[in-house]
Image (cartoon, rainbow, N blue to C red; front, side, top):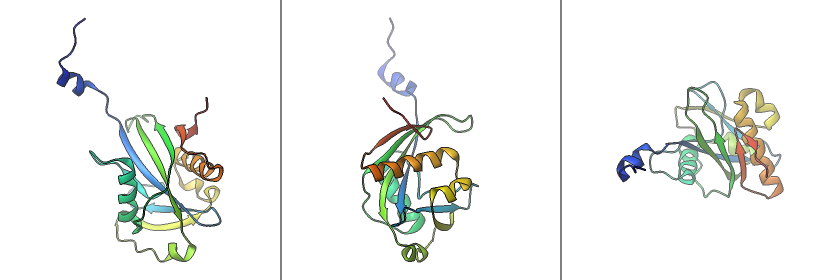
Length: 163
């Protein structure tokens, strides 16, 4: 059996994209959603992990950049394997607990990122038509993890994996 030289072996390893988001909610369990300018579906604060950036750092950075909230994150709630959809390669999506916000505080957020048009506090059911279905499932898993105190939830395309 011929072995590849180490550097060639490393170059042959698969690469996965990663993203990290932050679940921020109010006392009524409504979720803070961002309305992006660059895509049709709504999202939670977050984004793509930059090269060499850990997901928890991405989540905090993106939250600060997009909605001006820069605070320590709570626990990891969801790790989701996102399969390739033909356009985007497979990857991993993380959701961290961003804690609570009041409706008044959400209304006073200073949005300085041109990528974000507005924020909305909505129940997941009310927001669902505006979300990619896989993100809706991922947020549902994150909310269930918070309520049950059992995190992180491992998902595949937003579906919790059991067993």
